[in-house]
Length: 339
Image 1 (cartoon, rainbow, N blue to C red):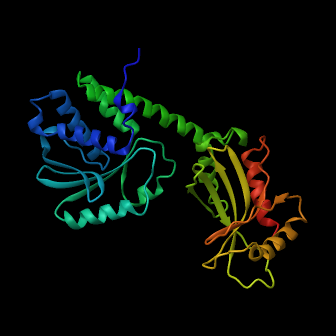
Image 2: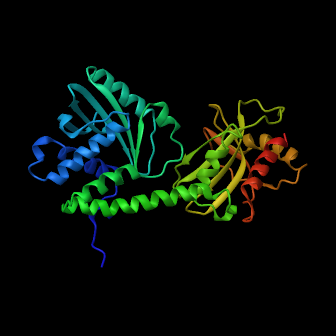
């Protein structure tokens, strides 16, 4: 029988923060007499973090560990002394979310100011799969992923640790590793599976690897029906007479995981001038449809809703389930090149 595991219920990033801090605390020299195996494992974690920055540390060199959670909103922060050199270590901990709002740069700048006499070590601690780490790298953080964390626990198990917390989390971590590998596989699956079989990660794979092709961007859109993935890019639309309002057209493709639905379409940015009546959208929409109707594209008129920032002009039928990646690329190019 499978033993109930508290970490199957305590799945938040705060829980992961606590486990990291718990292990780091075991690295303190005064804890060696309490449990030698956990002490050595805590030190192994510290050494592994330093190694990400090319610094080799022996266990007798780690002194004056001071660990804090949510220090100035930093998930896990600690200072220590290694060979008379003071270090300040930022750990930005993520499970399935990713960095946002320049938080990596802000934390780095803050510690540079508050701990100016310390050398900084910046760690992006990520147990879930993340496809694009360019921002992390640009901010000079080093990735510590789920496989790195697993090696820490494998080291601990080789020291015959019997702690229930340690062993329970070790089992839970195996599931995180499995999910990481599964998500990574799905990320590449769009290349060889029909569109109807693309998963959430398959769509992320498509959008990540095609955003530069269209000079576009993608992100997760929050929605009351569940999150939606959206890739969008600008194009040069027709000049529309007798419409005296600023707007910018763009093309999009979205995927809703909850509804298992794909949609393509045309939208416009309203540039600070809201649309409150359907009559305000109609001349723009009609002119676009007039040009599109000369092609073989089949578009539909979406229901009107008041809008402040963007509004939908026209939508396309959901792609046929047998579509490939190239079919979708060709359709998006056709939507752009009509104009």
